[in-house]
Amino acid sequence: MLHVISLADPAPVQVTSGDTLRVDMSFDYRGKAQSVPVYAGIGHYGLFGWNPVEPNEGTVEVEVDASEGFMTYEASVLISISSNLAADTYDVMAEVVGHSETRVTAGGMVVVPGAAGGMTDMLMMIFPLMMMGMVMPMVTGGMEEEEAEAPAV
Image 1 (spheres, rainbow, N blue to C red):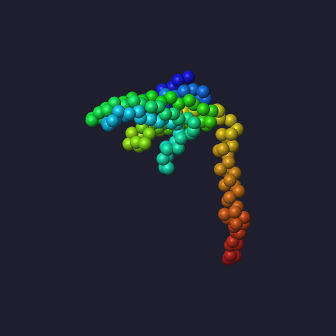
Image 2: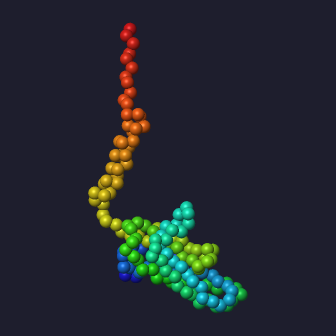
């Protein structure tokens, strides 16, 4: 199934393995006539920059004309959704390769559904409680407080 995200007006899409995602973007260019590579990928954009989930990315060549003023060009990059995308919500990023000023990122646009609830989810909620039960005796030294006797009057 083909899904489309326009980075000019992004809306979330739900994808599964085997689907194709088309990422549409526009960029401004001025200079000599040439072919410029445009990249788009699925991943997470965080504290350390862009972290793509390979091979869920693609590149396309766009022919640009010679111009002294900026001209707007459109690019569409097709991305085949692989089976290595875990159930999660992913960001989409597109840019003219080598020109980070053209980078456009849309957070939370690609949703990969996961298995519904079940034992795994329940265990993940219980796990922190079990850890607290093991850590608390180590923090307190494994000893219970001794009760002080009240002085007799």
